[in-house]
Length: 220
Image (cartoon, rainbow, N blue to C red):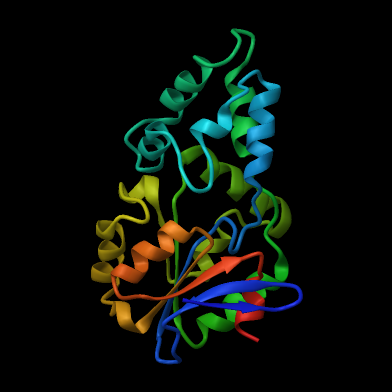
């Protein structure tokens, strides 16, 4: 493992060569700006003081895994969360708190993806859920008019709750490889979560771990 440091950004860099013909991007923290601290703060305001013990970037309670693989619905998720909150808290309050981590999608990243699409097959693979999917599509619609913009950019988008599998499980990566006819050794995987990078690395992917960086700096 090599750590490359620059004044404004740095990333972890494993097995990188120029021999890739496809790129799989994570969404949150790579393309879409997010902040896990905001969702923790939002649920604290609703009365759940220990939300960070249930949910964080590096770990999460099994209920979130179930939500991210479509095993429970948004209604079931909200019902679970309401058990920790006052009776006065509404479903809309929970939706807003849960989506508070979702920030913006910078135009320079959209422009970069369109350029990369001319040279590589590009895919999106996100561990997400139905509330967040609606949430970030609304953000995209407010900025770029088309809520399905990502579906027009990527050759295909993979959302964990729709395919029933999530990172870093090998079956999830293998599903994309098989469906798209990709060779892991010729595919670059970019993510901001180290556990997902490690899972992809075991599958033979070339990987870049984003750490306080912007993907545009990788492809300059």
